[in-house]
Length: 168
Image (cartoon, rainbow, N blue to C red; front, top):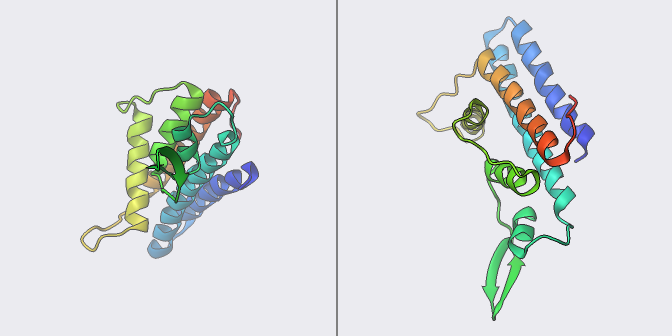
């Protein structure tokens, strides 16, 4: 995935949000807002994966860091630590690692940005992993918060890790 593709996902989320606002049909409006949240989250996931690929080849990485960045297991076998298999990591964990390790930034879970990110993740999860008793009532406000939060998080990573300004 390229940076331009991340921008397309974020732009797609913006477009879906706008279409939801303009839509008269309640069913379609709901689909646009839900799709906007999904596209926002996909943009964050893609961005983090792309950032991980920027650092995976660093010689200064410890073995556990290399395993984390490559999303593989670190195991002890025959007197040695080895990287093997696949270990899927939550997006938030990858984000925290990226900011702490390469941006020297510690997340304060009390900050509004991180509270909003937890909400966005919950909304995304309610769409991707719905529960029978859980109704995903997604509104324009949810979609707007999702888009703004993801853009803010990506901007923060650009600023802290890459020392650059994100452009959307």
